[in-house]
Length: 190
Image (cartoon, rainbow, N blue to C red; front, side, top):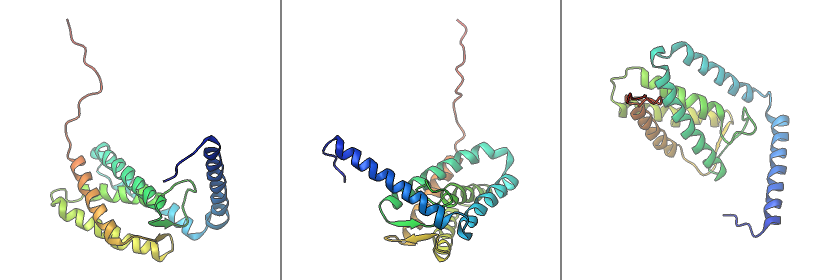
């Protein structure tokens, strides 16, 4: 933990932070932008968004987006924490300022959850959570490692399995919510 003694120390840390960000942006421009791995990430985003738009259950769009945003927020927050703590690292980020791999955290995982929810909705959620966790932890992550996008440092796939399992179950619970009160206040006649 960093303890800041005085204002000049705080200013020094801020200046170092800005300098590191400028260096990261320069490296990203020189080493990442327009590489095949960068294009792979861009294509993942476009492909998964297109597939979702085309094949989603149209009358459940709002419910699916509600759940998808939940998954995106949780996954990107956990990715940022893990990256910050040095548990893993991503190379070839699509966006240089994102602390997580955007195609995975904000696109792939939420869309997979949304499809798992809408396909065979009567299958027990634990079975779907198991399948989702296996696909995301034991297939997707090793593949990203193999193509040098993901680098586990102090992390094992089994940890991701359990996290993704519970994220799916939380998404399932949210997707079943049916009661939302109106934001419009009703005028009462007096």
